[in-house]
Image (cartoon, rainbow, N blue to C red; front, top):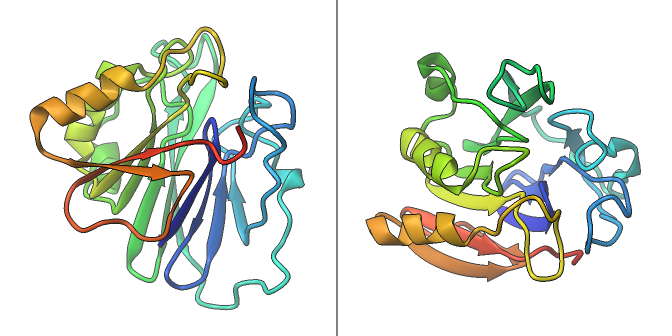
Length: 211
């Protein structure tokens, strides 16, 4: 599995089957400090319609498209806030399985999950989860949710860095400290790209490719 963190909540994941999936491409110029996403993928999934998550039309089809078995896709309907969508609307959690690999993109999750929802994503190979707060769950909430989901590898997203991100959201530092303090995961500084998920429980720290 190959993972590229484009920035904000946008990732491109290439499964071992060859399938390339893009999550939450943002409109060019809409996320401070990030350049045009400039990506190609076989499938595109957007968690909700806000412009920092929904520019699916900009994603190009690969010159050599995937021709293998169709992936299994599961969409969990959740909320962008903790008041049943009254503040920011709905949010989709997207689960994609291909070739025995299962990945979960949490979108702009802002609420707790039911036990039935947790059962559908628990133990995934890769979890992409927001940590910046204000618009989404914050670092502590994300850490608690990771404890419930227990993924093989987790990547924090939707955070503010020194040169990118929205002013109202936080960095990922508190989330990283909570994960490192519990000693359950190895921290891997993957830069902007990682070719394969390491063995064992892992915290992947990725930098935006398009910053």
